[in-house]
Image 1 (cartoon, rainbow, N blue to C red):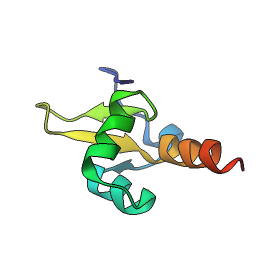
Image 2 (cartoon, rainbow, N blue to C red):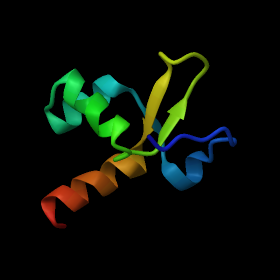
Image 3 (tube, rainbow, N blue to C red):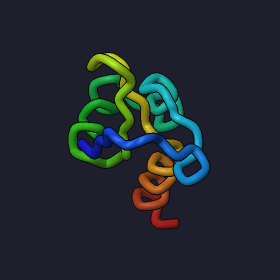
Length: 70
């Protein structure tokens, strides 16, 4: 999983998305979304405790482009 303790730069990576938003965008299950996160498919920002996981919008867009070949 790609994580960082550095300040988050919203201008570079876009808004932070919840796992639920990732699930809706990809039309996938929660477990599959977390598998993608664990595999390092997305840039992840942790907010506080382990439950505060957010995915950067740009990393989700890059994943979709890789999967669709666009």
